[in-house]
Length: 219
Image (cartoon, rainbow, N blue to C red; front, side, top):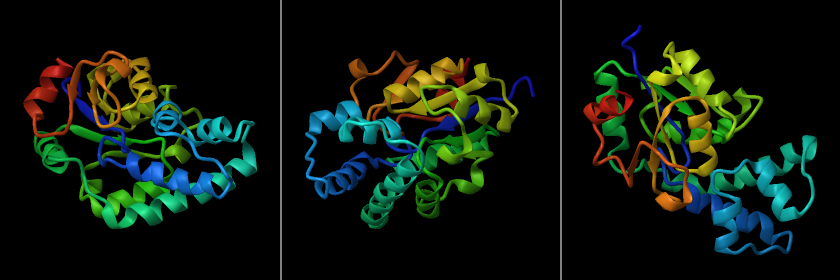
C-alpha cells in the first residue's frame, strides 16, 4: 500500500481531443439563440470550464437548477451526435495506460463532463476495464478547480494524494489537481504552457510517456 502509485486522467483534451467538437456543439447551440462567440472567447471562457459557467457567461445571466440541466442536456446531446463518428484517443494514450496497468499502477478517470459523454468515449477507447475509479460530473458536489474529484479518485484507488500523478489540459483542472496535493502533467492540446499553472511535466501526446517516466515524476 505504501508503495502504491496512481495515475488519474481528465478526459476532454487528455484522453481524446474533444475540444474542437465541443466548440462545434456550442456554436450550433448558440447560433439558434443568435449568438456567435469568437474563437478567442471560446478559448478564454469554454475550455476546462463547467457548463454552468459557460452558459451563464455567454447568455449573460445566471443559469442554474432545472434550466441548467435542460440546456446542458441540449448542448451535450449535440456534442455526442457530432463527435460520435470521430472518437479517437490522443496518440499513444491507450498504449501508455496499458503499460501503466501492466506495472500495477492504480488508474482513474476524473472528468467534469457528464456521464453520458464519458460512456460514449469509453465505448470506443478500450480502457474502462483498466480503470479502478471512473468519475463524471454527476459524481461530485463541487467541480474543478475544487479538488473533490481528484481526492475522491485517490480514495477510490486507495492511494494517498501525494502518490498520485494527474494528466490535465485546462487551468481549472490543473488547479484542482494541485489543490489536491498531486503531481501534474500538462497536456498541451488546448493551451500553451504560458496559459496554464506550472506543472511537473508537459506533453503534446503520449508518445514520450512511459511507466518509468510517470513513476519518476511521482518520486
